[in-house]
Image (cartoon, rainbow, N blue to C red; front, side, top):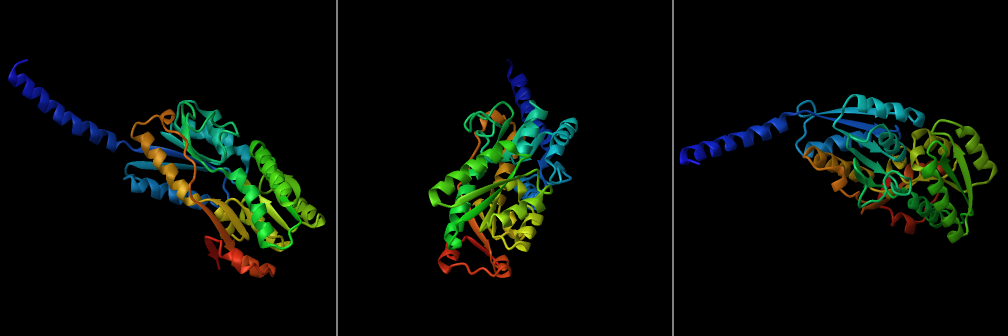
Length: 322
């Protein structure tokens, strides 16, 4: 190759490189987000937006969002997931197991970032290290925290003899894990466990709470996909100390929560979205597990129930809501 041709070739490559980079940056990424619509819905949307903004994605400039909430009705999730596929979004972010499963059924091509509990045990992925062709994300490890909530009630409420566990029949795979962990914690602590199933956060709640009262439950532990303000309000109305694995449950009036730092994990989900938009394949990205866990107690709710929580227990809390 002649020197002049070589210089021209180098010059062309130098121009093409920045042009190609600018072209990639100028593409508006379209992110689909699928969620149940629980107490932490606003936190999820806020942290996902903020997390991506930290990577340089500005809404309306180089990124748009298609948020789809089931409004607590899990039977709506398959159609909502299919709608995101029809919109040809670049990535689907699925919050919690039912959304992850719905997204998985809807597409094998669009990358899916899950933020979901125990994804191997619930069949979302075959392993954390190798999650599959189009799925990656974050494991919330929530089932084991159900048992931890029972242990915490043993330490908070003395004596604690009977704990009801409210599980979601519309989320059966994870509900089984929840009840298994609850029974295990019951055997370890000597606490009697009363399993109660409802179909979603708005169905059969009055009957469920009546059963808890008849059973003389000292407290109630709630599956994450039932963490709503209405359930927190019903627990307060029946003077039943209630706990969940979701911090947002405590923020809306539940007495206690113990679990992974939800907002931090929502932002971690944004990191996975960024990696995929940069060209990484989901199968190259192992699912990550949380490293920070948080105990939160709502002192306002405790006061409304007339509960006196031992000072030694409050010293263990990471957050006290007053």
